[in-house]
Length: 320
Image (cartoon, rainbow, N blue to C red; front, side, top):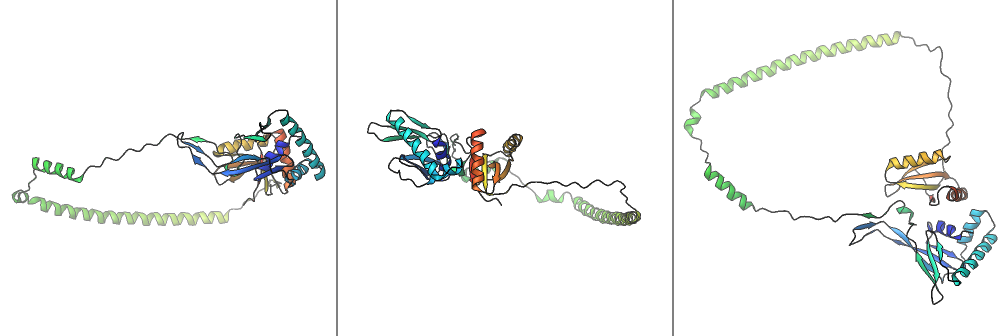
């Protein structure tokens, strides 16, 4: 009995999973952070710890095993008890229990169970698909501030070297320019008036021609008769739409093209895969299928974990 697989499934949804007469695996939410020396961005996650003192049976693990394996609750409890006895025997013999994606357990010199968590899997579903990112150090140069007084001094020096003077005599030396400017303005205004009249004439002619063409086209359409001698047969398509709030997630992708490729791969394998939109981190989520009841979804999840993808997980979400 691979008890660690059932524990791993429950750690996605619950903060505490108790193994009766053995101990409890507890998750704690850790927010995103940036390492001060390496400049690494670490996404939010759940870290796992182990408490040997919590051993009472709350029924969570046994209920889950019974639901997955379709056996009575009492039978599931006996199977867990048998597996726990074997695990304790391994620890007493000095062996290390390695639970994949959870961590390692070993008996220390004081006879207590020491736990070393595994960081290979993030049990925080909201951060699914996010990985550690390294960023180079951003350096900012101080802007160079130049005083306005410096520019004033430069302008004063330029004016002293190149003085500009305009005398009244030079302005009166060419009186004919005034009359030339008046004549130019008059010609311009006349040209504008003639141009406006010409444009209005052309627009009126085009509008009348367009109205005449539309009238002739409407007459032709009213006189026409359309007869289809060999109509196409009616085609009926039955499209099965997936519904339900229980979805088995295959992955979440930042690039939509990668999510489309994943859907095509799963469809070629025979799954009813599809995209269900973006999560709150902007990742495109791809699911194997959606189900109406939890029992159907858990059964399908177990088959997918065993035959296709061990990292698949169950998402409970009402789609819009």
